Amino acid sequence: MAALEGFIPTIWSGRVLMQLEKAHVFGAVCNRDWEGEISESGDTVRINMMGDINVSDYTPDSTTVTVQKIDDAAKFLKVDQKKYFAFSIDDVIAAQTKPKIMTAAMDKAAYKLRDSSDTYVASLYGQAGIVYGLGTSATPIDITSVNVVDYIGMVGQKMDEANIPPENRWGVMAPWMFHKLTLADITLNTDNSGIISSGFQGSFLGFTLYKSNNTSVGTALTGADTRNMFGYRESITMAEQILKMKAYEPEGNFSQAVKGLYVYGVKVVRPEALACLRTDYTVEP
Image (tube, rainbow, N blue to C red; front, side, top):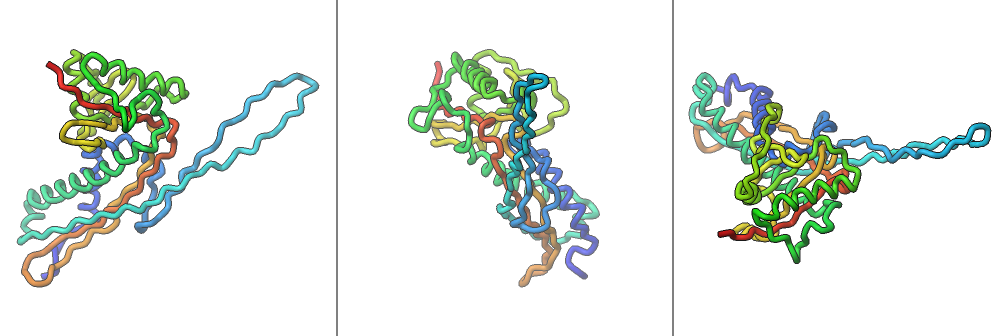
């Protein structure tokens, strides 16, 4: 019998992608409009952008209108990250007839892929353009229940001052930051049924807030130099795809197996609209 007889790669590829979308936290806040078709790892996705439009004074009968040529400010996203999974099942045909085993395995694969790509997005905190007054690697801000609201609000203020649109702002913070909000007796507005990402916590001070253990941190054990990221929908672009899915019979045994290739690329396209709040966990009575 051929390996995984009746196996339909496109169905299971679609399931893994669907589970990725549900599981993403950092990936959920990225702009995906330019994803398009990814045919091979190493493909380049063109992100069409343009510069500012000039506005000039006009005096009737005397002003000579100067026509501005719109700059082509396109950026390019390289799909250069590659991950794979491969697992075997003794009786795959039975698993597809009663798909609990295959479904569970695909869900676990999607979770691990998400964990990898979310960690990668979180590692881009160093490209944030909004950082002044929000802590540094040498002097992160000691966060307590008394000042946590002030500093989240300060991030919003700095985004306002940078003329970042108020719509679609997001923040991804470490779990202990949400604990500080709880200690501050802050209740988040969670009346947003359209947001289904697993890390969604609620809305606060104009931000849609997410919680993630993948938030970059200098010392995980103590929470020292935690790099909480804030932005809006245009800050980061991501493209991902399950490029290949194949059923095969491994050499040396009688099992049948599935392997898949996942590729993605991430780019900070608006660093001036990305903020990093560097914080230290502070023990409270």
